Amino acid sequence: MSNVIEFKRPDPKKAAKEKAKGKTLCKSGFHKWEVDKKTQFDVKSGKLVTVYRCSRCGEVKVKAH
Image (cartoon, rainbow, N blue to C red):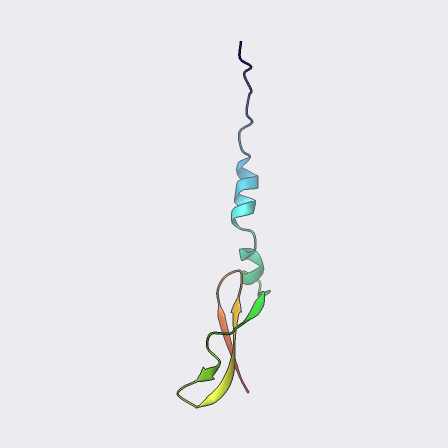
């Protein structure tokens, strides 16, 4: 005959914790900045700029040189 395997129900607290992973850090100001290589030149002012994008939330920060 067949064996019946009982599955455990997922813990709702654990699921919520995984869903919010990384977002709470960005809300507190601890972003994970990475250099965005797509746009390196500001057309309006004609200057070189470095564009930083947070890998967690997608916020953008621009630094002019």
